[in-house]
Length: 382
Ligand code: SF4
Image (tube, rainbow, N blue to C red; front, side, top):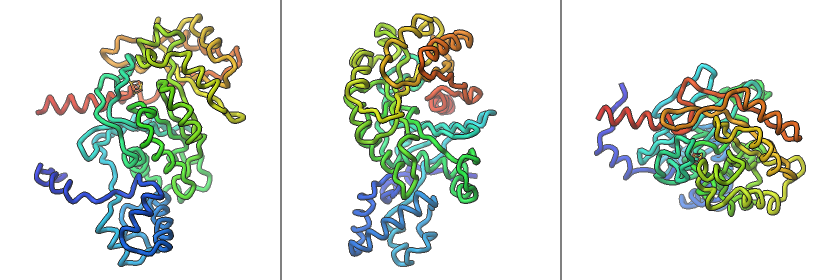
């Protein structure tokens, strides 16, 4: 039986909380080690060793870091931690999708979803606790924003999932990464929150994810999905170089104002203008547009044609997402026939338009649902 943490114990634990090394930038890690009063040259070597132990080997315990001397290991242990996010709940779908509800140190809850496919696996991570943007079709939008996540909590989602799917052990066994579906190939910031409204911590986390001496995700395998925070689109593209996805969901402002209220501040024209005029897209780079298919709201032939007009001249891909229904949303999923017809119009105009296969429908697949249901259960049991 799991020991119950009393409020007294919780407070005690908080007071003795050590600095977590996960989520520190390379420079911060180096500076933290310097505080242990070792020469700069040695600190630089220790930083490299620690980075590799943490992000290539997933070590949770300093005592296992065999190329670091015993005295320094115990010094590290006394001052730092490699603490993981706590899995509060885990739901596995029949299709292999795993949805995690993590509990953070202040008892906030966030969701992360692992989506294995044949040739790739994607991790959908959160950037905030809740969200301020209130997109009317999104379950997370019904939860108020509690706070931004730190880079420790953003990178921590990947580390905790890696632990859970036994990535550290398995990755050593396979040479060709793609044959093992447990290896996460892509990271998308499409969980709870708007990543560009938590830009500095997201940026720090992305730099850690892309660091080629550790987790080593290429910029092409990380996607920041934004509802359209225009001033940060160019900044994120220039500074991080990772992929940008726009949650478009409508082809004219009147409908988009309802679906994505942020549109009142930065309407469709403003988003498209910054994509066309400000981003210097590399060869073969394209912008992804996410488009949730809502019955009788945004799924007409006319919408599809208008969408083609909007993206004309912009290398684009349109992901069509069949809506994951949730009680009280007031929306329904568009019929499959209509989704296919919509896709065909876009494809005919020369833009890829894949229809995303619904995943994890048996495990409350809509973003934010698992968190809401857990809170509801708690209140009922109180
Ligand atoms: S769709 Fe994204 S930006 Fe909109 S409310 Fe949901 S989490 Fe926030």
